[in-house]
Image (cartoon, helix red, strand yellow):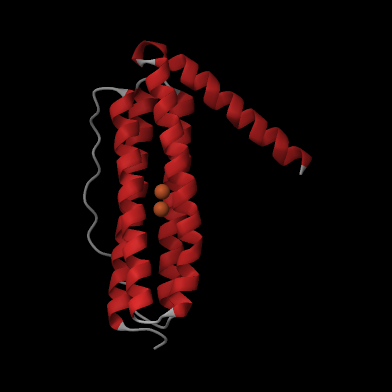
Length: 171
Ligand SMILES: [Fe+2]
Ligand SMILES: [Fe+2]
């Protein structure tokens, strides 16, 4: 095998965290759907898909290493929120926690001089910077608008979505 069992175990653990993040975002998206905030709902459903994609990257990598994929038990996500701010705060905290886990994986790979895994993890370091940043931004916007004016957040997300779609059209 290209790497140690210790690294394979840590990678398998990370598959669980990524799937847990995916489920958490599905739960948050459905909270927003119930609150009739469709832009926020679809924003979180999209994040859920991205987390699933992260999980699958780890799955494929473990398989590529010639090791056994073992998906751990996933904790049920939090699905009750008293307000939007609480849900977005939880998301930011969870991104910060995942960042810590990725850092720990990097440390472990370093300590084992596993440069192939270090190289694989580079994508996730970049991704975490992006996701923490964008979740932090969304939290600030939700806080600035306030619970009674979440429609402003909806408008903001709709505009952002439109400009992304137009950009894609031109690319
Ligand atoms: Fe992730
Ligand atoms: Fe994430």
